[in-house]
Image (cartoon, one colour):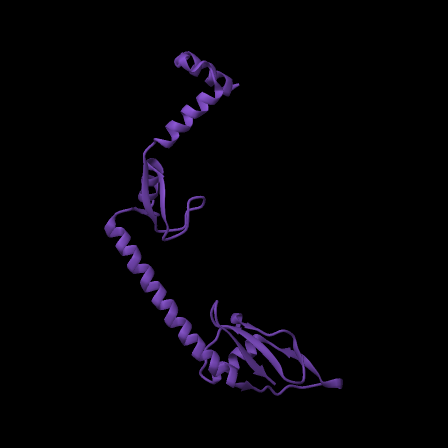
Length: 178
């Protein structure tokens, strides 16, 4: 109903287009494309637009809204330089963190943790060794690792087990637990 009324209005306003729907859509698309756009740098994630530190081109009104809400800054040469330096600093911090975690990985893989537990028949352990216990044991050896980073899969029998520790997205260590 509304679309037909629009086409009727459009055909009276622009009679030279001969009421062609294709011409009308082409006209609307041209007006959409020629609206003013503005380049911005996103400071925060914006749903449907982009993620933090991305350069996007959006309509003027939406850009001014994002700038008022402190979710974006206008794009300029200076703001681009600031963004580049921040990204470079973040990259260097990430690289140093990865180096530290690989050194810690080497220490952990050379280490062995031993637990004394009560056992029943057939070498079954009463209870199990949890990631919390492993974390506490590592804290005693001056290695502070959160228990959430340790993946201990049902250590409930005697023997040697290997536990995975997620030190970083790119660095995982194997710890020997007996």
